[in-house]
Length: 155
Image (cartoon, rainbow, N blue to C red):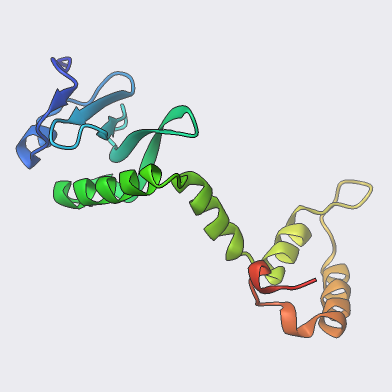
């Protein structure tokens, strides 16, 4: 497997397709949008990211739906520019993603996860009857809140 001669070049379909599968993780960067990178994995997976300094820390931030060739190069460049613009406005894309994900969590999801992980004193999973009792009690106390995101719940 040939090594990559330079880690900066103009991203084109031909140039990205010709990159060898590396023995260990490697990163290459675009000359047109220098902060846009492509992560190459030994498994053959290739995905776009942006390298930027957020809050004084330089990090690689993956582009959502950014696997190559699923995401086209021009789409990746546009998304990288958008993300870099947000970062320039003091936004942290990683924190925004975490907040969005957390805002989509519902009470039902939290309790289903709890029921799945909860164990009794002997380390056994909760019995179906115990789960049914919990559901019944919660249906009486908070019936309107089961499927609402936590972000919509008030004190």
